[in-house]
Image 1: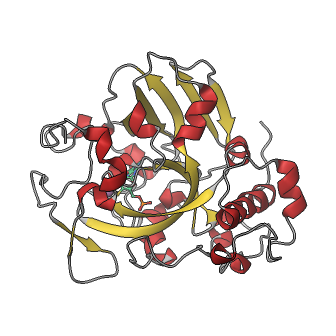
Image 2: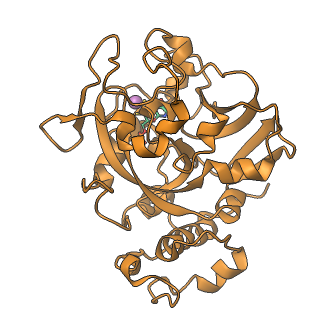
Length: 334
Ligand SMILES: Nc1nc2c(c(=O)[nH]1)N[C@H]1C(S)=C(S)[C@@H](COP(=O)(O)O)O[C@H]1N2
Ligand SMILES: [Mo]
């Protein structure tokens, strides 16, 4: 596959995000439509809803810059989550990361990830599907309409952030490959590149990083793949070029830099289940009533705040997702 210059990826990607945010529609956008729109990103959109339009004009100009530089002027479409909590800053979100492939030190992931080269990228979707498909990054951002999703991210270590992701529902990709009736779980795998990922040269985890969801969890409309954040392409430290975001589960479920997606009929063993099965279960739903063996999960520290705040059941998404776990003992299925 020919390497597409960053300048040719970004305009479509960002304009698509902005446009989807403005119109909030679910129709698929074609490259031709996008091409017609690029170049007038701040022009008022005739078909957009006035109430959602306020920040549309802040879309930064796109130039032929490497991702680190292109990410210097971020813009999100809102300033708070649906509970009224302010977004964390771009600085906070890109400088306090868990990404063990680079290092276990949250404050230096950004620096260690500087040489990671996300393009070109391919994601192989395989296993129990009628249409196994390998998507390039460009396929993903053009085939699946992107939108902004402001989600709380609650790490199992009891810190949290509010992050404006840009992405698309996992269900869209799964519908495209058509899981067979035997498919019950989805297994996700991170790229293995020890030459660019210094943390993979030591055995902190059994690489590659693997995660999994039940198929119905993956199909839930809140479960997304993110390719951007604050209206920009993802930084390497946040999981470029594509990562999962499942906001009602602990952060470690939201696997970064995905290269493989496999539909299966057996529950995948995640990297964290393999490392410490007594501490990390398959479900990993945020639950203030089930403590981690080594600390309480009843409260958390929002990055940027000093006072701890109570942790919410399913991270505040209980009304949307509780039905997925009806009849299950969540203390056993942790
Ligand atoms: N491949 C991979 N994905 C990963 C991790 C990791 O170490 N490797 N860390 C997880 C953890 S523990 C958290 S809290 C989130 C952090 O995402 P962020 O750095 O974008 O905030 O990524 C998750 N995804
Ligand atoms: Mo985490």
